[in-house]
Image 1: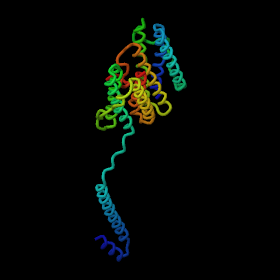
Image 2: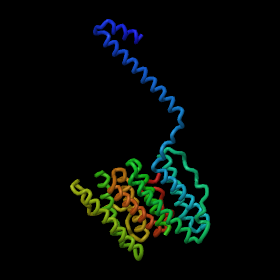
Image 3: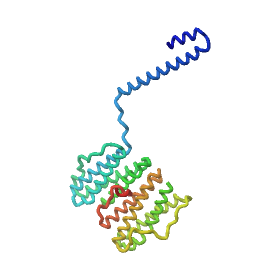
Image 4: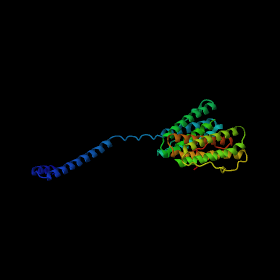
Length: 170
Length: 139
């Protein structure tokens, strides 16, 4: 019908055919766009879903889970230190939980195995914890400087907490 | 941002004021720690005064209310813990209002207060000596 209109308009050689032709081109264009859209959807459906990029705070949460496990293990190995180590482990667990909440990810499971304190003396174990806390503190500082405003207080508290762990492990 | 930093300045004035009576009731390593803490708060105050110059910054008052009277070592340690916790809270509250260099300063200030609070809890034999979220009011 579109083609008929075009041909007829062309034959009549008056002003009408131009309008008709415009309408026809627009209609054709609309069909093409709709078709492209539909086939585009089909193509996307065939591709596997891309995983969303990890949240920038995910490494901070991973550190928290790992450190919680290290402190739990050390508290078992050196019960005399448990009064200091257990609250630190609980703090790391609270950090991991809160980070999971704001990242809207699944709550982390406790660290499966942590045996860093299984070998060596108590002093070696505490020194290893200090090294781990210091590195984690520095990561948290960098994360706090880069994070959006609405996350800055939480990440800042986590950085400060890690610094207090260093103090508590003296 | 100015509001948060002004609140931080008020807290720093109060901390400096509190360490006067605190230091008097402490001896030895504890007194040394009190002097160092007071000096740290003076440094923070000076940085804030610099940052807030031209914004009608509040002057220091002649006196600030203490959470309790400092009458002996035990009350001095309790007040020192509270002073650092309060200062930590205002610095934490300043973090979302800051970027770049000022955020770093606020974070370092929060961290310093949190570490000093831990140190005072150890002197006071309070347990635990750490809190999960320094500067955040307990839930």
